[in-house]
Image 1 (cartoon, helix red, strand yellow):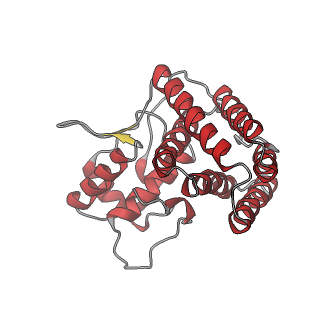
Image 2: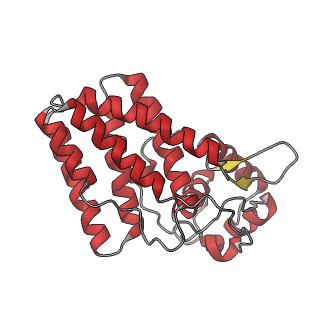
Image 3: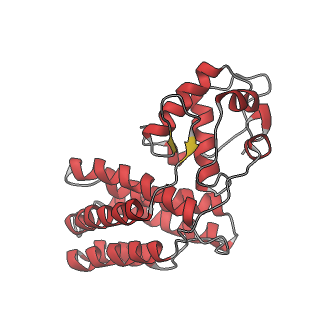
Length: 243
């Protein structure tokens, strides 16, 4: 998986430009993260080919990559669908992330260099600013970047790789099951508090902060069934692949 995807803002391809499987991956992923494609939404190859103006072979490549990132389910001889994790799977995913990210934060306390701390602080500030101006796509990007930076600078590289995977998994779950009435899953002060503990070198406080943050996010979920009757052309924006 391309670990830099969360740094890329979606943009309209140049007129007459070729839409790649990467373009399709980014647009479908973004549509899921922004709750525009609900759980179990069907993603027929023919329809996606018409939406993006590409061949089915390009669509298949994109769907294979989306399945590898846990964004969709893809089974032989069946139409691909946006994932619909079970309650048990959702709980297990959050539990695993609490263990991994809590340990990473504890190991990083007092050990991150000035450049990394400055990068984290910049993202925390940008996330708050995006929330204040109600720019939810930007807020999500900054929030994900904070956690990806923690994974990238983990002293234990295996744990860092595991966290990168879990951040995407939990982000997809949050996008799919966030309460419909909730405009944002922003938890004001949580990320800033974590940085304070990291800067002070308080390992146990950093661990607790991560655990509390993830418990709070999990509490915002509504795991009841969602309707999946969607218009892919309207959501994904036609051949220009706007999102």
